[in-house]
Length: 375
Image (cartoon, rainbow, N blue to C red; front, top):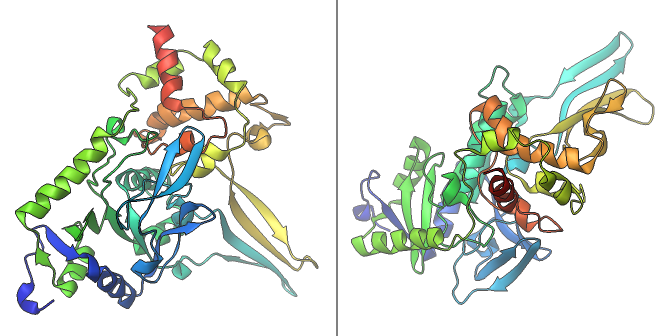
């Protein structure tokens, strides 16, 4: 594109499909490692990418409660899928992180804390609205309370967010009722809406503005803007699940002995899938790992889950020793007491926990059943 084609960055831009790699190149020039959607083992997951050819072009995902499969699209859209089993949480809040290392020396043990300066510089490609909302939730947990987690903070501050507005929804999606999507509202550097011939581009930060100026994009036409709006509206219209949130805090806290907890616990495997795929869950444990001669000890933080039997161990016993109690704790915390802790819901309506539950437990249905019998 010539310099004469440049348009003001405060108006929607248009990136032709064939120039997507120029955007990726601009990000790499600034030192970012690109992470985006790829196909691995029959699912769309997030991994290192180099070019647009690494993206799941022409593929989509079909999701239902307890079901997931890939299908071919009739077009060649790069981002024509919903969300898979992974979230960006794994890059900002790693599954395993070294907190400190203690090394035996002649003078005694020397302890070295993990250096946040070594944090990678990621550009996240294809972030959806519900995922931006989930990252904002984790910001409340890790950097907006009294203590800022240095590992999360360093990774978060160095990240670039290339968001993509959803043009379709899965049967498991309910972000519209949660107010978290499907259109990206905030938290991105650049936001794309994919059309057949390219992408409308919205700028969300000064960093994103610098990228746009470097690419010298065209102004989006009225027709392209109308088409982009139609794509986003379609995603809303496709959503069949919803959750009423105005009374869920009171509802769950007022019904700790509701029979539904036991009924669902009979199906629940306590497998932790829901918490592992959830983009906001943050439970972790800390343990020490030694080398063979016990001359060095690493303190590691690892993902954990409230569904694990011994996660609630304290004072010589396990507090939640039944599946019922662990399941009730998870749902009540996610939808109710999370509000007390962080003034925000712990659920963003992405539907991952519904899709990846082996027995298809649906939290929107669970809440509706409790409400129906409580009214």
